[in-house]
Length: 187
Image 1 (cartoon, rainbow, N blue to C red):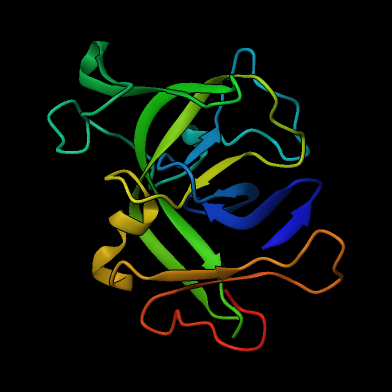
Image 2 (cartoon, one colour; image 1 turned 45 degrees about the vertical axis):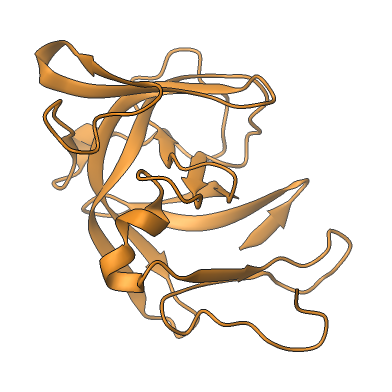
């Protein structure tokens, strides 16, 4: 996890072949979303928009999926599941609920590749998102959170340690059974 301004960013690669992006690590929300082509009204960002037409593993989530329900989730024309996410600061994200392969780097250098992650392929954003991140990784406890989606592989466990804004040390996030943090000053 890297710090940029008031946000903590996590590097994620999505698609087949994978495309590297940075997304905001958000423990207060469930929805993981990335800005996708075409995108009308999206914020300017350093990374190119994710193009679902250039990956072999992208799929629209269909309306009959067990994850196509809940607040802000809709059934769109052509049997596609859509979503609309509104945040407390007035920011918003709207698009298609889809599945894709997500890849994370580990501290050992090994890559953790997780297929069929449900995420929002965003076609419209509003509000105060910065230009460094391409979206949000939702680490909350709801059904669409990656923590809940990965329950089988990580046991629903994760821990993170974010350093203060004035520190030069790095922050970490750990998934799975080894997600215990200990040491002086750990809360």
